[in-house]
Amino acid sequence: MTSSNTNKRSALGKGLSALLENANTDITSNNNSSDTVGSIAMLSIDKIEANPFNPRTNFEKEALEELRDSITTHGIIQPLTVRKLGNNKYQLISGERRFRASQLAELKEVPAYIRVANDQAMLEMALVENIQREDLNAIEVAISYQRLLEECALTQEQLSQKIAKSRSSITNHIRLLKLPVDIQAGVRDNLITMGHARALVSAGDEEFQIAIFNKILLESLSVRDVEILIRQGHVKPFQPEDLDTSDQKKKSSSTEPDFSGVQTVFKEHLSDKLASKIELKKVANGTGKIIINFSSENDLNRIIEILNK
Image (cartoon, rainbow, N blue to C red; front, top):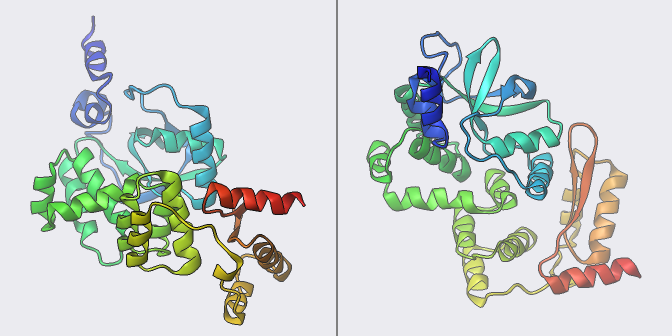
């Protein structure tokens, strides 16, 4: 058996650590690269190949389709991580589910962190420097923490010392990445605060988390309000009187830059009719979705009854 075959066999099943620690799997370790370690670049999706060391080969079709729909609506929240192979080619280090779902969504480009194996110290410095920026939202900070722990093989205690943050702060941020992607996007887009998101993590059930998240957006709930709802363990279905139908609200909605006046009026009309929040989502190719939000199974049944009349 050749040495290269032995190296490949020993790497199988080790995933990320195998790519980062085994110099024999890195054909660019001796090459100069103009790509900035730790930065994000938009890469053509057909220039990226799957990770041959990924022990996971089966991906549930329905889950990928759900992720595809989420990417179509919100974009890719957490970029892929790739390493440069030369000749304008890249290989996945992590993010294969996002990569496959992006293919299903027929994206032409995806955001990615470009790595050259054996650049551990450079990556670590770049990420630590990135965390010190004041304009990062809580999700971006959480992603940076996670990359330092996973890709730089740091413990939470070591990370705490490097960035002068408490371990509890690091843990609280990383827990945000367990939230449903809609809520992560809400944090990223400043629709809710870190305090709201931390409270939602403790809500447990994903359906309950989404119901409270929608209620936060609709009623501008405080963090204290959210904590009370979570302790109560249920969310009251939306009622017509819960909706903000003031002239100021309608004026704000009518100035949405992405939709014509007719489209905005339709959105408001449907929202009034169903007594629920309606979202119109567009993507670059002109396609999109009409999203009807509901807070519980009973609320969904109420909406279905109205639509069936």
